[in-house]
Image (cartoon, rainbow, N blue to C red; front, side, top):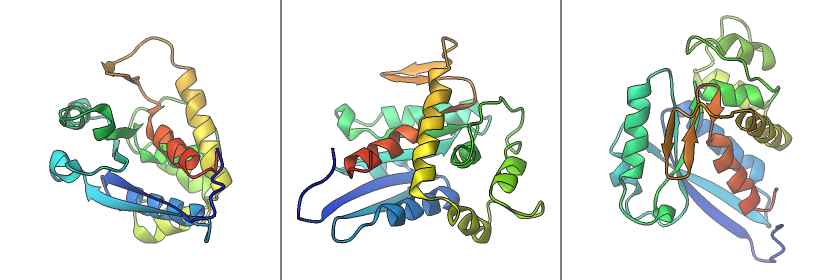
Length: 207
């Protein structure tokens, strides 16, 4: 439902992230959604390298842990289990905003539908370079190049990425590799990050 209130719509979200790529993405999303005097969306950030439970404790607003599978199932399970071990009701627990294999897949989905299985963690890089008009030598993890990528992402691209991610998920039948509560995890390519972002867009009236 669209926000029809005359007062400015304000929301804050906590994102526990792996690195600057994800943080800068959500900062960019806040700029895309900013529409004074209608709404202001802000994100606070934490680090997945620190104690997740301690960072989330007593946070009453919506939160997500933004992380990658990275072809490391033991590490992936450790992060998931840490999130689910947080005491309280489901609303007190963070969303699993993950990408499998990694966040580069989410960037690709802003431009095209891509559902091919890959064998290595760096296999998305050339696709990202091509889709975002980068040189073959450019490091997509550097802050300068991240900014260049984000400058090519508009709100319509975010909505398209959500649609593409949903299509990937809808194609998954059986073959669940892990299930926790209402969360199902599938072999790559697989994502949940789009569900958190879709929630944000619906929350502020963009969907």
